[in-house]
Image (cartoon, rainbow, N blue to C red; front, top):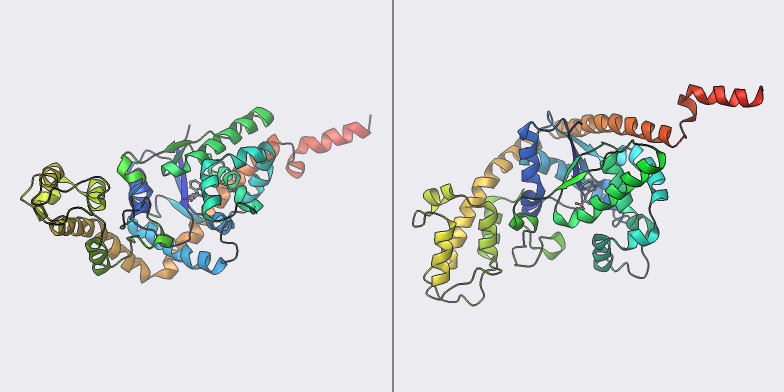
Length: 361
Ligand code: TRP
């Protein structure tokens, strides 16, 4: 069976380091592994509208930002199709049919949706479109017969919902759809990179993000003000690693080579951590290392972004071409779905025959 990837992001803001370690960096590796027959990366504007319906300008503005983030992170339009969700109208049609296969109580039980409802104060009045987005996400995945969906842990309930829909569809109408597997980050630090303030998650609304498109000055400033160990007041004090954001980021980004290059007092991160815990190592030195490590990762991304920014028409064309390819693929699945559901009236010659037979006994 073909190995196919589909994944995506809501275009509600520029992408940050949380997106990068949680998923984007992995996608580039998967793209370059040569193991996959097709890769689709979706800018989920329709899903973003399910909780931003009153702010369409924001979604529109961020489509190009997310596309630039993708390309600058190293996604290669020769190897992946980057596309815009709402332009592939087949996805909406699939959603309409899948809605028959899911109960209201099943949607209300989805833990990710539950948390999001609370965050958005939707408790007393949930927009139907919002509650329905796990079904729409199942359409995104199944329209491409994706086998592999690289996502963060918070998306597991969405993949489970998609798998249930696939099983229900196939057992009701015949084997058409493919059950997808989630592919989680291989390192738990990367599953949930905290914000620079130490809060559980990087999030635009909390103002605790480092963006892929930040300048080196912005990154330095953000690292220098990062949350560490509040009880580590003097350099000589023993420091704690628990919840120490600077070390968490080093866990996500640092390699042994970085020590040779930027901090030769230590052979590796473990030695540095040991010293920090014993006392005698100041936060500023650790932060300087992190700035260098991040700079190594972000400088090539920034340089690619600058190139793409000079050719926005080129990026627009990449989106258009990717969307056309995605649309073709989704149309093929939709026609199989409609045939299985017996609603393919005008492209099934046997239908007319059967109708004629019925009346010319
Ligand atoms: N829900 C995902 C997020 O918030 C975005 C998304 C939409 C997605 N459709 C998808 C991810 C399909 C994987 C597969 O990040």
